[in-house]
Length: 187
Image (cartoon, rainbow, N blue to C red; front, side, top):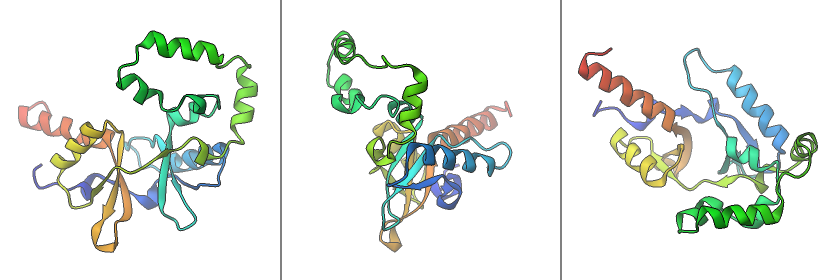
């Protein structure tokens, strides 16, 4: 286990769902669906789509929460609610803000129809967290926990920080679970 590297667990970039920053939410959903059909049996499903700029550089990702956030564009008015709650705002205050903005008053069908045409760049989460492909799994665990993220971009340093894959929390968790079972004789 101590000899395993990030590159041993990562999903190569070519196997992941990727869309241009000019793509719509519907384009991203279709890309995600296509990537799911190419997965080998037993592999975890992808939970995000990577967003690239005109230079093919990964600039963001949109996951399940991002897709849901696209249903209600008024969320962008409030900013990052996760950050607000982490800095000490009470849940009641955040709830009252949400009540005042009257989220999800339209019927779901209309919200979904409108969301199909929203550009991913407007709801994606910029991606800055990364890890070198030759880093240890220990370092990866540290970064996943510290940044509280579901995935890390995997980079290759010798090519000017070229993105070569994505390390997912689900794959690291499965690896650790299997290792613990092996060590305790449960597997």
